[in-house]
Length: 142
Ligand code: THU
Image (cartoon, rainbow, N blue to C red):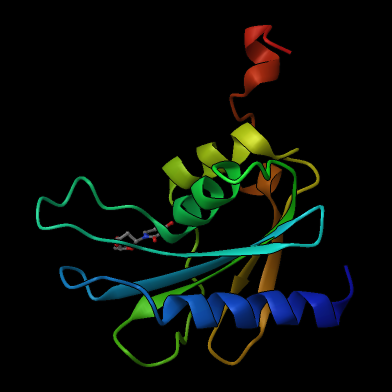
């Protein structure tokens, strides 16, 4: 991936964040998932009055993709922060989202771009964010 492509993915995550439904936490998150076929699938966090049905932006994007037959991913950009203003800090994915990404991605390969409102980002691999992660390869299913 070129730096320009990474920047574009961060921009798409910032666009997706505009759809965040977060009336309880007011913490708005957007994600943009780049599939190996070149498609970009976006997601936002979707909260609920009962709290626990809340879905994170990253999982919204992964579940949208998988439900449309897309299961191979190259990178995900994530942006999050409070309120309407652009995020000043990076927001790292929660443990549940890291595990969901683990199900469909090669942890050594997946690039995780943690972006900010100024369109800069910090880059990690999923393995860096979820060392010794549990996956299908450990259960003998693959
Ligand atoms: N959130 C995400 O969308 N992604 C994460 O990885 C961390 C948390 C959302 C869930 C909730 O709507 C809000 O941020 C505050 O936790």
